[in-house]
Structures are given as structure tokens and as C-alpha cells.
Length: 284
Image (cartoon, rainbow, N blue to C red; front, side, top):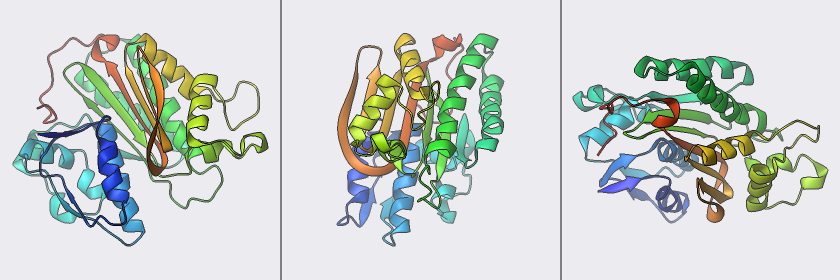
């Protein structure tokens, strides 16, 4: 049974963005993580934008398809035939369905909504809630602040989603904006960075498109937390991908796709969550 995860989604991206591809077969998919779900939304919309929509065969597993519905996936790709809630999707319990991030002044409201959904399910301590809220603020603000820093993208299409699993909580944010290298290029001294170099300097050096002292460094702080908390961080931008866990952090070449996509997986124990797993239709 095929799994669309941080480790496999690039194979699907290559198929979708290929001009020769006319169809995508997902019938064997039995599991999708939030990061891959958001990338799938953006990739399919990318094809639609250029007038070459893809014929897709959807998962046959009712639990996988139901979770996609519960997350609001089909509404995002304008497929009204599949947005209805079936028995399978009613059993699914999406922790936080796909949510749009459009303006900086809406970030506080969105973070509070995500926090509320998580707190309703788990008895989080104040310390744990504050830590997660801070991470969400920093990730969500990246979209309105950086995805269209040059003013050349009419709609960066910023998205966020969250899901819980047996041992972890997975948060994902994604956009179809200008990407990290183009954002940094608004500084004259940083105009020629490759995607990989931009990703490296932002995550490891705390570089920002703002030259003012004290500005930037959000992704570097999150990367440091991930290492301390034995988590997983994926950052994708253009043709580069950072894969970081507690033991390593490497940057790889990736199939080109515009914008920035981030996946963050943290152990539930970091937040003091020891309750039984939730049957949310996302477990296989």
C-alpha cells in the first residue's frame, strides 16, 4: 500500500509537473501526511493554472479518501463531486483541516484556532501550548511576510494543516510564492543565491531578507528546537529540500516547485501527551 510522506511525495511532484503527464494514479495510496497533502493541493492547482489539469484516479481505501475529505482536500482542488461527507469521512477526525493563510493580521486568529483544536483533544500544559503556539506563529507569518516579497505573485496560496498520530503531532504549512532565494534577493548583496544556498544560509545562519539587526532567524530557531526535541523538519523551496532530524540535517536537490513548503513533526511526549491514539482515519 503506497504512502505519500515527506520521503515519497517528490516522486509524485515529478509526475505532476511533467508536461508529458496527463494522468496520476493514486488508487494504491493508503496514507498521506499533512505535508504531502498540501503539496498535492498546490501541485494540482499549479497544473490547473497553466491550463493542463491532470486526470487523477483517487485512493480506493475508504479511510484514506475519507481523511482527505475531512481535511478539505477536494474543496481546495475544486472537485465538487468528492466534497460530500461519506460514512468514511464522518469517522475521520481531522485535527486541523486545510486552512488558508492570506494576511499577516489574520495569523493570530489562525494560530488560536489551531491551538484550540489541539487543546480540545489533549490536556496540554501551558508550557507545551506556549511552545507550539510560538512555532505556529513563526511558520504562519513566513507566508504573508515572504511568499510575495517582490510583489510578483498575485496569489501565493498559503495553506496550513495539522494532524496527530500515535507518537507525534505533524504541522505543515505551504505556499506557491516566490521561494526563499527570491525573497532573499530583495537584498542587493543576496541576489545570486541558489535555492540550496538560500536554504542553507536561512536555516543555519539565520539570514533574513531584512538587513536590520535582530530581524529573521525564525526557521533557524525552529530547526534548533527540532534537534533538541528529537523531531523532524522538512523545508522545501524551489529545487532544494532540507531534511533535518535530531542526528543530521542535509540539503538535497529536489524537483522544482515554486514557493516554500514546510513539514514539522514533533513527539507527543514533548507536549506531555500520553493519552491513547485518536482514531482519526489517518492510521494504517
